[in-house]
Length: 297
Image (cartoon, rainbow, N blue to C red; front, side, top):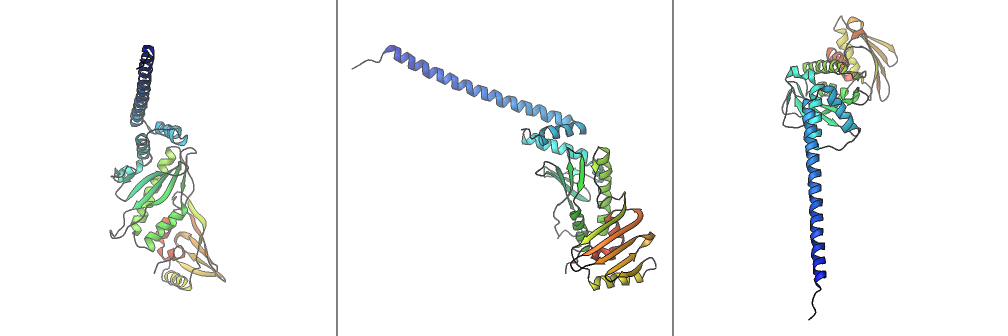
């Protein structure tokens, strides 16, 4: 029976021992790295908790826009604290947190914030319906570009709001008016924070002088009803100014021209220098709304 060389046994033992130590060292280094990352994240979350708007905006640009890696918790905190500053005008209408991490509730509506593919912050609104049997989807209405400091409003969603009021009957006329006022207070606040709020149909600080196109041809029944309404009031007038062209004269010298085509209706609205939004306009003259939206049967 042959004997194992003594030096071979020692070498094998020492090799195994060194391998074990090396492995343990790697584990410790990894634990230290993880602990340092966790500590750094805690410091970041503490800094976000104590930050003002300008600091939060800077962190948004450095972390989110630059796509730097940081924890989901810190990202959630950053967006929550930032949205709290952005939505400050809603504090006066009972803004409070909900059970959803990205949603605030006010007396009049819910507002949820979410990043889009370009890492812009999109504000989604859900108004509280007048009949709780109905459910209204969130509307992606406002987009904030934190790099260019620009605010854009989704014009097609303004059309959706009008339809939810007039056609679907989910919202009341008063709700729509109050919502428009709340949004304009938000626009004023965002401008004060340094944002450029781009022109929109919701802006009640500018006069209306614009062209809108409805993707349907206004029927004779719609025109007849508008004619009847205008003839019943001394404040309104209705004139035919072309083969398929009409003009409605409203209060305070405001006018709407109607140009009917085969598959669309072109509307030109002039508020005669009176500052108002399109929501203010349509809620003031609801008999003209069938020119904007088709009533569902």
